[in-house]
Length: 242
Image (tube, rainbow, N blue to C red; front, side, top):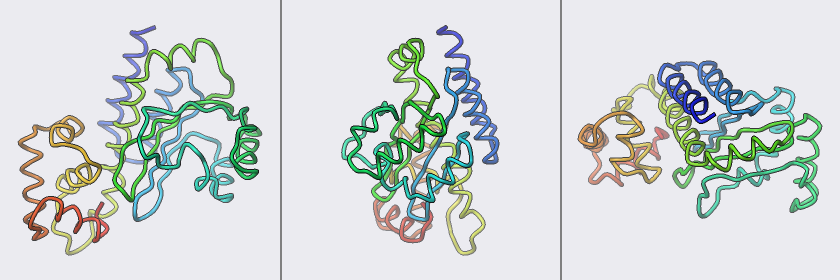
């Protein structure tokens, strides 16, 4: 069992490394979710310039979810003061909902057979939030055991997915804008700095050396005519680059 879990994780990371399009990212996550016993996955990112969803949920459900504004009340998508590794949830616990609207959200999810799952809440900057969810249509003892023994791995799944989507899709949205004096890698390093990551953290996430991260951050600071690195982050956020 452990070897199968690790093999699925390795294949998941390889899929992220080679992914280019949103469909590539969807397939990589869907394969991993199925290998670990989940039926669906969903990645939700909220940045200053808007929200981004990649998921294998039924489209009728995701359309309904956003039309009803459930993303604004969903408890697992509310940015916590202290980020916990993950939140376990069960739609059948709707009686504990904080409001009739939240209870309706749980009931609607159940109508699509989305019953239970976990959400990895990913650390992000002040105006940002990201979460990676794995869900099933029913709960089992084997799945509960997997979740209990694999929390570190699952947290890394969410963090790596967010890092690669942000680097290859979200930031690429700005890559062709005229007059922006930053390279793709400089934007990546600044984005992770804005999330509170250290140079060592960024190096591990991007597969480069800490010295390489410092090189890109120094270049970004100079190219933005910033006095300090926090100043560079502030300027990049103001220009909508992150």
